[in-house]
Image 1 (cartoon, helix red, strand yellow):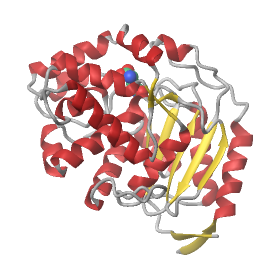
Image 2 (cartoon, protein in one colour):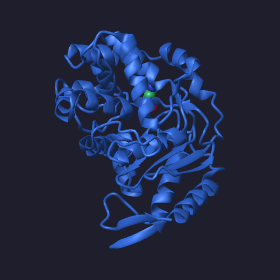
Image 3 (cartoon, rainbow, N blue to C red):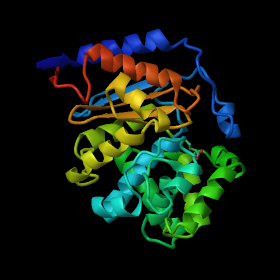
Image 4 (cartoon, protein in one colour):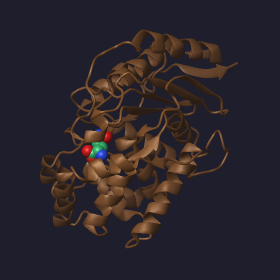
Length: 321
Ligand SMILES: NC(=O)CC[C@H](N)C(=O)O
């Protein structure tokens, strides 16, 4: 089936989602990172970036929140840019773990068979791969400049979050050294962990994340700045990683109900990719038991279902004025 969807239909669906879920009180802020526990739980924003560069925003879409695990997508893209698709598959992998994002059990079970850059272990490995290996400052510059290219504007480090997370990331410290034990980390483990912690502490807006998602949906060309960021051949690789594990152990339920590959973070952000059509992001701090924003999930699901589209469906659609 073919159909057209107008920009005003998309705007209406987003507005309805915003109005319907604004006062939802489900979920609870992440509390294992002290900074996140204190963020206003009523914040709620939605942003959709179309491939012609138009952006539809609602609510707190320009509030800077902790990007957290959504940054795993960005740094996976950087590893893909620097190493290519084949090497990333060999050095990290592209499988779901089926376990929580910070699982140590997953590493033990996988032994030397790697998984994905979109859980903590693989994301720390991705940070270890960022070139130039051995140079923390230059690696950090590469990570930030890649995120800037994808979002079309710079993220800003939330120093308090970085300190809060560094002081409490004991589980991630174990992961970094366990990776070393299995030869699955390619730079100094402490440095790789610090880069990972810092990238998670970057402040980002829902609007910026929707632009980054739209860049993936647009074969690597940022639809707002028009800058080519990565080779078009990498887009399906990135979307497949996001589809496989974007919601950790809840990824199947998410894809089944929403129809869009998306990645979450415990800061409350979600970024979804609709290849060839748009990038979408929603942000609200309270999370479900797997660390995924309750309101962001509800909003994105509502919009997808209202528009009647799914990455798995046979309906082909064109977005018109
Ligand atoms: N799921 C997340 O967003 C987790 C990110 C967080 N920095 C952590 O490593 O625990």
